[in-house]
Image (cartoon, rainbow, N blue to C red; front, side):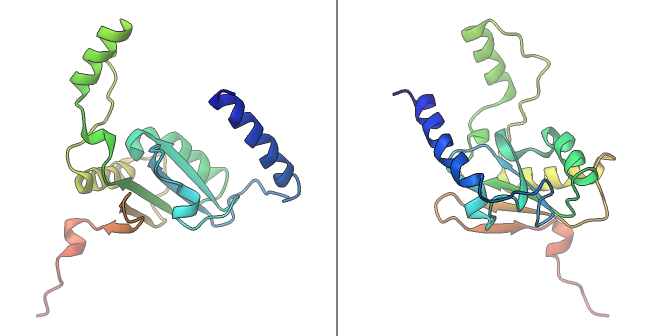
Length: 174
């Protein structure tokens, strides 16, 4: 049996259980999570969500710029009122540059991807800060709701919040 056939069999079992659950369209926790597509992250379980509680938006690196369309729909049409941006340790996005991937695509597939930004990064904490900035700079998403950034440790399963430099500095008393 192929992996896809196994997936179909598992889906059949899942569908039987889901038919009894009475799911709602709107996410119950009113939160959207942008995270990486990495197979080691079982997002709902790791972040404490049951089916129907949150929108989990996944892409390579958990990059916000690729998630803005989904976030706009999530917020404006489906009522989410908080956003968590979650990158992770040992991310594959740390292992290449745009030029390296473009070269591979050209050599292996004959594809010209010179116009594509694959959004790799060299510093996980900075990538979270960059994505928080990208969110705040977008006019397509709500600016009046909580938006926080985290790094998920794939070895320990722990979330660690990434705070902007201004939030890390203690307030001096006068």
